[in-house]
Every structure is written in C-alpha cells, then in structure tokens.
Length: 173
Ligand SMILES: NC(=O)NC1=NC(=O)NC1=O
Image (tube, rainbow, N blue to C red; front, side, top):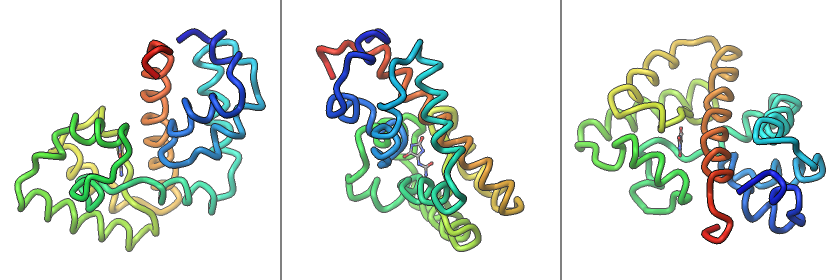
C-alpha cells in the first residue's frame, strides 16, 4: 500500500486499517487521521509516536495496560488480537513448557504488582529465553526509566505493524 492510498482513506477506513497499530488503542489512529496527508511511512509513524509522547503519564500507562501478557491467559484462551497472536507465536511463546509458562506468569505478576502495568516487549525482536531474561532485568529498573523502556517497546511493536500494513496489498486488507 502506498502513502497516497493512506492519504485518500476516509476516517472509518483509516481506523479499520491502522486501529491496532498500537495494541487495542484505536483512539490513537482516530487522532492521527486528522494529521493527514502523510509524506511517507516515517511521517505516519512520527505522528503515532508524537501522540503517545504527548500523553500524560496516566495515558501512557493506560496504553501499556491495553497489552496482553506475554504467554498469558489471553494466549491460552485464544482471545489475542491477530497481530498479538502472530507476534507471540513467532517468538515461540505458544509452545512453552508448563514450567517456562509458570515462570513467565510469576514474573509477569511481580512486574505488574511493581509497576502497575504489564511487561511489554516487542516479541518479534525476541524469543522465549530473551523474554524472561528481559523481564527479570527490567523488574529491577526504577519506575520512571521502566515506563520509558516499556513505551519504547510499544513503539517497536507499532513500527513493525505499520511496516507490515504499508507493505500489505490493499486487496488483502
Ligand atoms: N505484553 C506484551 O509485550 N505483548 C506483546 N508484545 C508483542 O510483540 N505482541 C504482544 O502481544
């Protein structure tokens, strides 16, 4: 899909296509639509990220809370979004052994209890071993730093999803 096609989209089409670039936060696409026309993918990405960066901390934490746990209950229940399902299975998180899954579950619970939002990692840049290693490392970080790190992961996930969409053939959307 080229940027001209994106710029020609009406509001509904734009949110249909880009509403899950940031997991379960269609509001962001709904806001970014009014920034059109976009010069290219980078410009579109810049507007998504600028919206996130301009939010108060409560809004940024809200974005993180919209993310399903890695290898969590939503994965088991099959209620992940298509993007999350692909990302998590690509990182080998759908085939964890029981002990690995329980370990992640326990770490996720400790992380959420500490920071008040779930651990977020761009799974496509990771694998099952790296996920729990990163979780253990980041669990020890100061809260302000961890918020910035987590939002950086949200942006990595969003970048990959945008790149997929811009490469996608509109007929298949
Ligand atoms: N908690 C998470 O990090 N979730 C996810 N990371 C991804 O890359 N996809 C997800 O669903």
